[in-house]
Amino acid sequence: MNSNTMIVLSLITLFFLLYLLVRKKLNTIAKSIYLFTIFAMVAVSFLLINRNDFPQIVYAKEVATQNTRKALLSVKEETDLLKESVLLDAPILNQLPELPRGCEVTSLAMLLQYADVDVDKLTLAEEIKKDSTPYVRENGTIYYGNPNDGFIGDMYSLSGPGLGVYHKPIAALAEQYLPGSIVDFTGSDFEEIKTHLSSNHPVWVITNSTFKKLPDSAFRTWHTPSGTIEITYSEHSVLITGYDEEYIYFNDPLTGEKNKKAPITDFEESWVQMGSQAITISS
Image 1 (cartoon, rainbow, N blue to C red):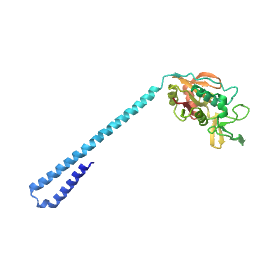
Image 2 (cartoon, helix red, strand yellow):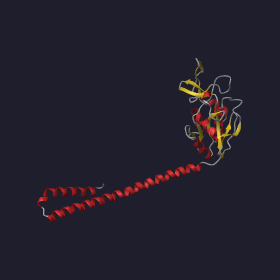
Image 3 (spheres, helix red, strand yellow):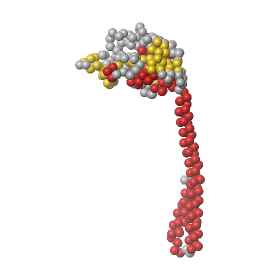
Image 4 (tube, helix red, strand yellow):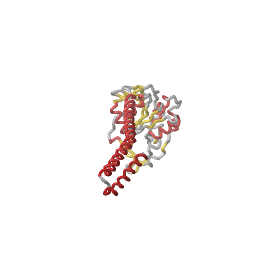
């Protein structure tokens, strides 16, 4: 409401009060003039209010329409990004024989080499953060490290206890080689993996060695300095290189197989079960 409207409304109030004070002394004609004046001022106020509010209403509607159009375009663009099928040519590396438990750093080496970073699996094995918490078993309860904090156990041999490492230490190490270009989208849905693949970016993930959902019996409880976690000795890491309607494709560091395939539904379930851990590179 602008100043002109305020002035007119103030005058209406003043005229109405004066009318109430002197109406007994006014004749019929004077009363009619008074009432007509008040009515005219009300009409003017209405016009002034609508004149100022109408453009704002129109503007608000235009903004809402534009935002809706932008949202629809965003959805369309995201949908258009997803290709029907993808198969990337990422380098294949075998974790064996040097790194029997080194699937995570070997898959990371494949991702970094795809981005033209000159680094090998053994270098990454040395540099990855370690959790040195000792393995202790007391009355059936296992006390050990947390793969979210660093690599657990011996990466170079299967003779002693060990497991692997999860996405946080891997992403931190990758960031040292490609600062500002590492995308850790752990916790996202599976479609996000397809989006990155459609942009020609392979994806590092944590899954299991069967590439399908495991039964509850495959998991063990560990008590770690960071809290209690559920782990499986079937934990595995691969580099996803593509997909189509039926299959997901990946480089498997354990077998050294390039663009190995697994049913996409099974693979998704195994990935979700392991915490939907995923890392890639940005453009």
